[in-house]
Length: 156
Image (cartoon, rainbow, N blue to C red; front, side, top):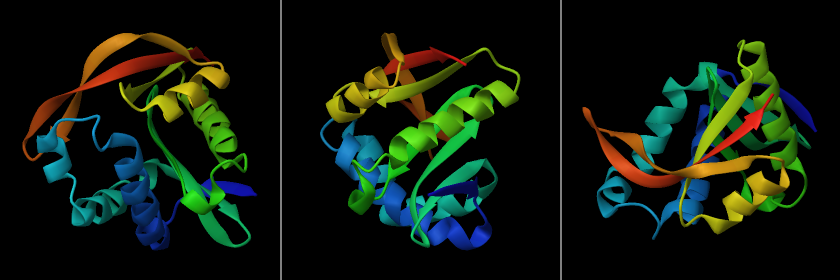
């Protein structure tokens, strides 16, 4: 497995992983208004816009997952279904933690939809601490929508 910064040509694969993974972890756990806004097309547009924030893990010549980091926030962590359980997520999360530290922060944070038990267990096994419930301001159109989440934190 190699980890590298994403390039523009990775956006389509990243979008596909993001769309499928987002639906797995969020459907039934976020407001329907957010589900309606997160169309398949929206993930392709967002992935193309976020290449500079994206790091990918490559296994056997294919992108197996990605993370997006901005400042002290680990915004996205997704692994392709075929690579789940293979250690890709742990490698990506460690890279995200390294980036947060390199950005000059002592603590990283991320938001997890309250009902996404699989992700919450993964972060806890990875040494992250549940700092409590809060409403994450998800961008929808020109505004935001509060999404019930838990804030996880880890010293880096």
